[in-house]
Length: 191
Image (tube, rainbow, N blue to C red):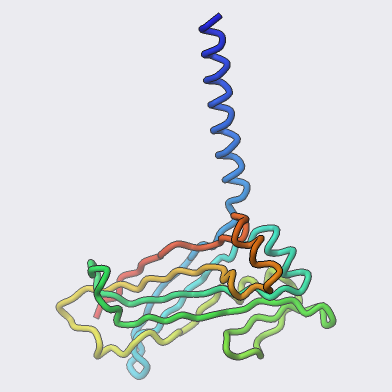
């Protein structure tokens, strides 16, 4: 009798862990940096190119389709490789990009704040691709890097909950479907 109870409880535990793992995998919509590269332009210094896959959750996409603008924060740093936490970054950029749906024109719009004009798209998929494309973003001048050090570019993007309309924020803070982030992606930068 005791062995049966032990088997039942261990089976229930394994099923619970499996269910939790499956629910995390299903709710695994998240942001991913697909490509990150840099190049040196003689006139403008180091330029960054990136491709970010914005895997918004179903709730976020539903809000977008109902006219709620979604703002993503793209945080970019250039640091010395192996730098201590308290060391200053050579570059610390924060870009805020917005995707919104305009129901009257039935178009999606993507722009970088503080501007409000941007590019319009007929499909949501095209707008999401454009939201994730960073092309030739100026990082810093080549003279700021010393040849005897190694450097790295770090990029992270998150959904900015504070930019959501006020009635939506409490739910966004409590639900994991709104806590979307890519985590830090690093890329070496050679002087």
